[in-house]
Structures are given as structure tokens and as C-alpha cells.
Image 1 (cartoon, rainbow, N blue to C red):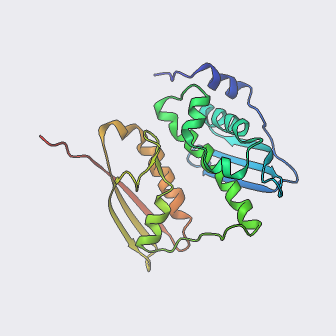
Image 2: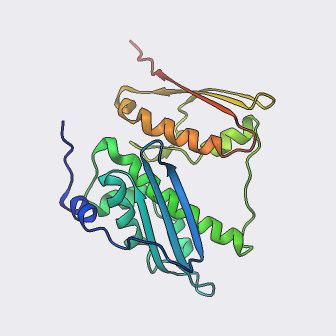
Image 3: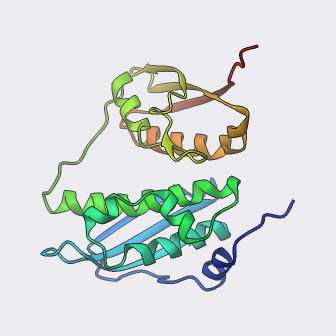
Length: 220
């Protein structure tokens, strides 16, 4: 079945804004994976005194929604301070595009995560914050998963209490995660698993990530 896109999504897909790369960028970040089909790279020019994003460009490797959300994100980011950017939510992107098909909501999550990652790296480079490295243990893995969102609700899978089981074996470098999902979340399984793998595999020492889904039990 063909997906129904809004006029704005089509406009930003066919005529994306701020495409390319800033040669002397102050910050850069790439999120996603070409193996999974969606990836975005942002380059930013940030004024060190005002902390305002004066320019932002993107390169996208993915579907129409991936390109459209990245394009819209650059428009929302330009002219804002880094603190204002950190307050942006994926829903701000989807609302600005007059909505996205439910199965493509993860594209807005990827777009905003990549932008915030670039800002985060800029803050680290300028000594404003310390780089956070998660440990390969239960608490470290759980902390990393706080950044994984359920595309339907826009809320962390940790905050939503979707993690049914979490097992970590540091010596083997393995992580097993079981999530409980309701029927309405089934269409997001692939997007959620992709984001979980991306976050957990970034932890030093991780070799194997196993993700399993369990249907929610309905009371009679």
C-alpha cells in the first residue's frame, strides 16, 4: 500500500533545503546506518560567543521521509541557540511537516537525534561538558537506552517501561534485551530495534546485541 505524504513532506523531499556540507564546520555528526537504509550527516557553524547556530547543512542517505525530516530540521535549527536546539522534539519536526506516516515516524527521531549529537560534540570540544562513555554493565546499558524513543509516543522506552528483561555479560560482550510491545506498536519494531542496536553497540566492549520482542498481555 502506497504511503500518503503531506504536501510539505513532498516539497522537502523534491526540493530539500540546506543540502551539502560546510567545509569549515564547527561540529559534525552522523547518525543511522547505511545497512539499515537511513543515515544523516549534519555539519554546523556555531558562534562561540552567542552559541547560535548560524549555518547548518545535511547529507541524507535514505527514503523520502529521511530527506524531508533532515531538510525541515535544518530550517528549525538555523538561528537558534544550542540550548533551544536541545529542547527540540521529534514532534516539532513532524508538526512542521504536517505529519508523517506512522511507519516513518522514526525518521523524525533520527533527524533530531543527529542534530543534537552534533551540538553535543561541539559542547565537548569547547569544554562545556564531559564526554559521557557508558560502561558495559546493567546500569550503563540501561542509561544508554534512555535515548531510545518509541516512535508512536515519542517517549523513551525506559521511561515507558517497555523493557521486560535486560541481561548483560561484560566478559562475553553480550547484551540481551526483551521489550514488551502492544499491538499498536508492532509497526515500529524494526525502527525500535535499529535504534537500540545503534545505542548499545556504541558502548565499548559490546560484541553481541540480541533484541527480542514480547507481546503485551491483555487482561481478560
